[in-house]
Image (cartoon, rainbow, N blue to C red; front, side, top):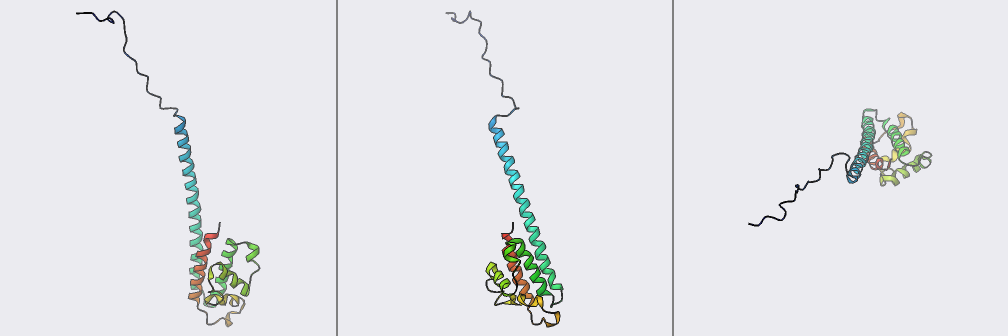
Length: 160
C-alpha cells in the first residue's frame, strides 16, 4: 500500500468564521427601523387629527341636537348662530363675517344647501333671528335642524 503523500504534513481542520454579532446591526436594519418609526409617527399623527375632527363634529352635532329642547321660537336664532360659528371655522372670515339676510342664505346654499336655504326650510334664517319671539310662528324646526345637520356634516370636512 502506498502511503499518502500528505501523511507527513501536519494539517489542521478548516476553521469556520465566527457568526456575526447581534449588535450593532447592519445599516439596512437601521434604515428599516427608521422607516418603521417614521410610519408609526405619521400614522399616530393622522389618527390624532382624525380623532380630534370626529370629536369636534360630534360636539357640534350634539349641540345641534340639543336645540330641539329649546322653545320653538328660539330654534332659528340658535341654528343661525351655530351655522355661522361653523362657517367662520371652515371658511375665510372676511367672506363669512359680514353676511346677513339673503346674502347669508345664498352663501349657505352655495356651500352645500342646494337651494334649501333660500327656497326651503332655511329661509327663516334671514329674518327669524332678528324678530321678537312673539312674531316667530309657522316654522318647521325639525326640517330646519335636519337641513342644518346636512350642511354642517358636509362642510366640517373642509375645516383644518
